[in-house]
Image (cartoon, rainbow, N blue to C red; front, side, top):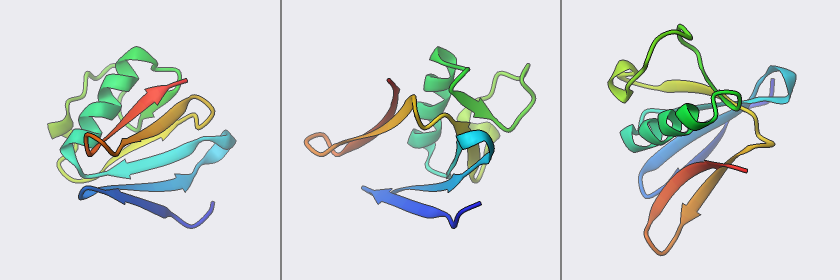
Length: 92
């Protein structure tokens, strides 16, 4: 595995690390980042995986501290909206 890289914007910190099978591990303690990742997971569970029980319906509060998520970097992108000072994940 590679060394972790950090993305920080408007106080939102996301740690990124390579994972097995060409996937990426994302970790964040920011509630808005966690909510966004959970929303993207609902839309595309094949590209966003939680390290939890697959039958569980998670909410951001379940991850009191850092929430780890495995994503497919070929399909999951991070968008930084400089005009609205927001960040978000989306599927391509």
